[in-house]
Image 1 (cartoon, helix red, strand yellow):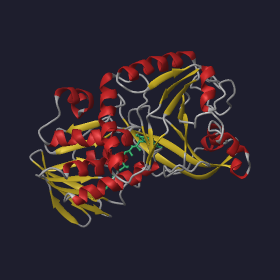
Image 2 (spheres, rainbow, N blue to C red; image 1 turned 90 degrees about the horizontal axis):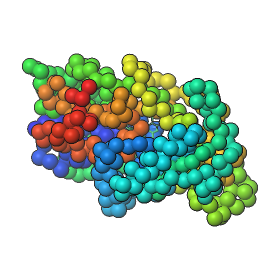
Image 3 (cartoon, rainbow, N blue to C red; image 1 turned 180 degrees about the horizontal axis):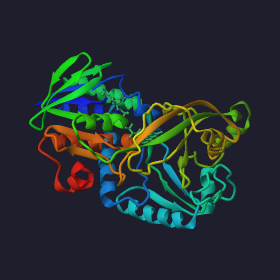
Length: 397
Ligand SMILES: Cc1cc2nc3c(=O)[nH]c(=O)nc-3n(C[C@H](O)[C@H](O)[C@H](O)COP(=O)(O)OP(=O)(O)OC[C@H]3O[C@@H](n4cnc5c(N)ncnc54)[C@H](O)[C@@H]3O)c2cc1C
């Protein structure tokens, strides 16, 4: 079978590495460089933590997690186990976190609910925080009433992981082409026949749409309509000014645990370490976890400026990390999440025979990439099983 994968982000490259192990003739087409779009824009977390996951969601993450465990053991790629802490600003959310801890623990994830007085363990003062955005109803939270902590979540460099997948794909015979744009997909009698690129035509029986936020455009070219929407993901890397004083060193040497990846109920988050996922004790990344689906929100993807309020709040959010009381922004960028109505990706063959999608990864594309690659391989090999069709297949909409 001749397979063309469109998109060289973490989803396209993980898929290419997976399909490279098959007998198919596989080509991956990336119009820019490998892993430099949404994948590089991300916080680089491989997440085990989740709020009210279903057993299916935990199993899907566990499947990806096991693949990552092997990858980080066997390759020279670096990943650090920093864990995740969700923080509740309302009692109702604290209850949800407590339930989530129980569900995760039932499925083998090291997850615990932490009462407010236990948050000091992560250097967090539950009674004083002025960096939270107001909730939609105007309430200003500003204090923490509990947390969900998982220990195993990893911080990695997702662009490097993507390049590693691309190298594995090349080693197994996949033709990886960068700087080449797919401009059209040709079909005949409702089945894929070829892709057109600006450097020529490539015959194909199967085309895999792994174009990230550009997936809706590619779907449109073959008349496939799926409920995909965009959300804006502003990000900033900050440097602690305390780097020049003894303060940060004092905190670094204190008995409190290093700050995990910390996600507020009011959606902002902070992840210790540099933008590229390296340890860098004086750096932290602040972002906004916006994964809500609004029908029809398909953006131009050209807005790269941070909203002003995000920029001004970022230092307060960063102050959740020990030693980051006076941090300044060193770098800022915007990424786009591609979200779906039920928060799950869309993976599988569409109504157009041979046109397979692997898109709508919401805020979890790094976390789920190896599992999505497996599902694409299943789709190519004859189709997903009924559970996966129901949970992630395009036919569920
Ligand atoms: C701010 C932010 C933070 C995030 N943090 C996390 C996190 O910590 N953990 C996590 O699990 N997930 C996170 N995510 C989500 C994750 O980054 C994405 O789900 C994931 O990167 C999507 O990968 P992708 O390969 O689908 O898309 P991309 O990385 O965008 O790759 C798609 C590629 O397709 C190429 N392309 C598009 N159209 C064409 C065409 N016509 N021809 C050729 N090439 C084409 C593009 O150039 C691009 O390189 C975050 C997302 C954002 C925005």
